[in-house]
Length: 555
Image 1 (cartoon, helix red, strand yellow):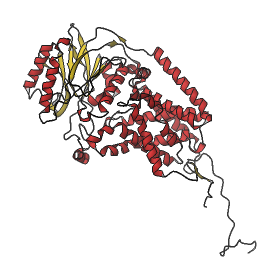
Image 2 (tube, rainbow, N blue to C red):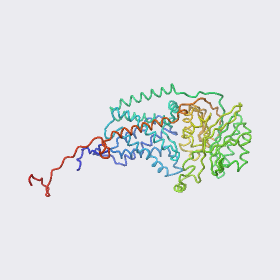
Image 3 (cartoon, one colour):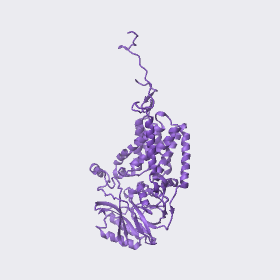
Image 4 (cartoon, rainbow, N blue to C red):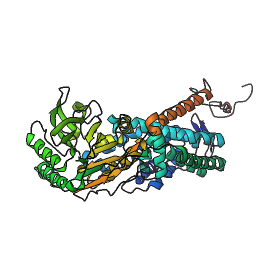
């Protein structure tokens, strides 16, 4: 039966109001733009404050969706916009494939869009106090589950995790010491939900305001009682060598090695305990090119300190596997010490191509890896001698691995006193990537209570203290330089060191409990169990004759 204009047509997924609507493409474009907004909170813009309201347009859009299908589409498009925006600097390497990746990863937010609609709008109208309270707990938890799933290394890893945008906000770093970057993400999304609830209706305004006040009190409590490792012992002196863009000619690796040698000699008077070179700073195996080993040994002897280099070359590991390894190698005054670490988590497309037989074509449209690197099997803590007669326990990470909170936590729990990240973002030199990558060191330091030294070939190189604070001046991408940093040490463990990803488990429990509760509320047998109340039967039209005239009784 046709529905007259202006009448509400009851559907199984809520009321659908007839009337003028914006074209679907405009709503889709709005979802893409709304999803991209949070990228402004990350470096290079670093508008950290906008993270607390950047999700509000996306929340309001999904919450006002007329159907569940439209809410899922708003979630998908918003997620795609977010992924493309925080990874836009990859366009020069993988070209249009970044749009494909963004679209695939964006699908993870489709259920989140449906969830937002059910709690902020949907069939029940504006949320009251109960639904508002549920939204404040469930929507951030569901967001965190999306972040966890997409943080799997094979899907690109935890780059652009929303909580990482708060790397220079001291209260957020304190939260990270309690529950990692995941707890910071939960807090940031919860503030966005509260702001959206204030806008949605007067009924939810009080609940949202109370939630904001309680959140502020909880943050203050964390500040007061959360244990932090106390600084202790004499600060080791660690030198960072950043050769910069020396040349793009075919012989540039040799020129870069020579420039690194020169910069290393310049810190001879700095009395460094350790010198750190960036990722891929050596492009030949020391076994096949012993002259390189001799040059590094001479440097170490001149400085009286070990040199930690990173070798990107074909070699063989302790298990007899042959291939190209990204290998952190410690060289001392007596030569290579034999202490090495092979990169475990490789960058999809950049260092290997997943399912190369199927996706190998991407190497023809971008700068994807022509040959797969071989992944290491275990993390390593290196012991480095100090000038004062003591020793320093160093936990190496290579490039992409600094994005993974669990790897830093494992090293801290294994006894590392300093986390050292060897990186290279030369391919993305003039993009947001170098600053974004360096900022991750602040989060890892705050989470573990261990200082982080982030050394790169071309910048940004930076050092962060055990509470996430910056130490000294960074070396920007325009510099070819070396610098010596006094790195403060700390002893003790953070709550994140002790309890790990507990915030993730809480989020899983919250979402699971909500889904179970919603399932119990459904009425069995009513259109697949999706309706909470039956619809009244439509009026029966009068009978008609074949000529269209009303039938008369008795005829």
